[in-house]
Image 1 (cartoon, rainbow, N blue to C red):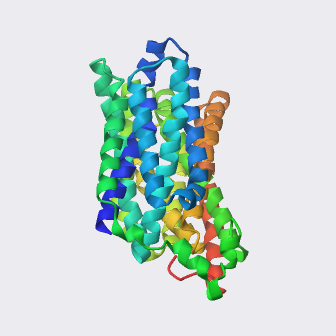
Image 2: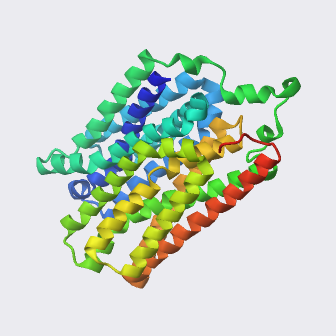
Image 3: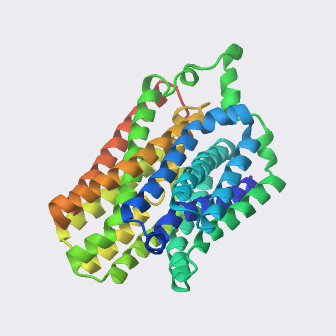
Length: 405
């Protein structure tokens, strides 16, 4: 298990770096190619579409290829795509490469996540939170790496760094493949059921009864949470520049504060979730996040207050993704690969749609209204997780899934 967590951390570090590398070098890249920012956005969108396809196809491909071939193939897609970026081919080729990179990311993240959740048992929250720390570390590191390479006019090697790390990750997974993954998966075990029959929850994409309600609520939560996180991360500097009069450089520091808090929080979120239970943890942290964003709306755009509240929001939101993933999987035993991929796909959809809507809202209604809009979304997250917790309680009372979720 220790080997699996270590390799999972390395894979998530690669994904964290790779998800942000295009944005980190967007400015010099569009100037080098002589394209518009909208064209750069198309590159991001193409990578997102590849990721969505990979996430949705991961369970089917795992059944066809097996765990080892699927993961090693996904890592190979990542390293080939990233090293191809460094060659600076024509812009059309760059756009064609992007879905390949996204496909690799989209398969690797849910696949490794499902490995961790199905193997860690009662310690799944702690294990997933440790893995998520490295995703956050990658997201925190890449802007600094990009800035350094831009300063020495070698920005294209930001892609090379991701490619090299993907190659190292591929090598280590191939050589030190965790033996724990050679056992039948929990999905396969659950599919046996009584008398060799798959349980009802296994036959339906979203289960049945209270378990279906939990998964539907969790799907909505992932769409809102990921979109909310990406919206706040993308527009926090703009809120500070327009609302507080900070310079671009000073406002960007708020992102470091936010991602730093996210990384710190993930060091402890798993232990807290295991101690309190997943539903209690999610209710408490969604409540704390709602308070932070309501205060942002009420207190206005003061720079000091925004920095403090951004740090508090980062701590509150740090463990939500990993803990909600474990919470949902425990609500639908025997569906780990499928549930993980489905929820991450909803997250990708939210991550594409909500930031676009937030940007439109900021253009149309200004900074003050946008802060309150973010507060409303934070309260919505709390309401969704409350519905999921209520359905989970109903399922426990019906004896449909284990206690402690």
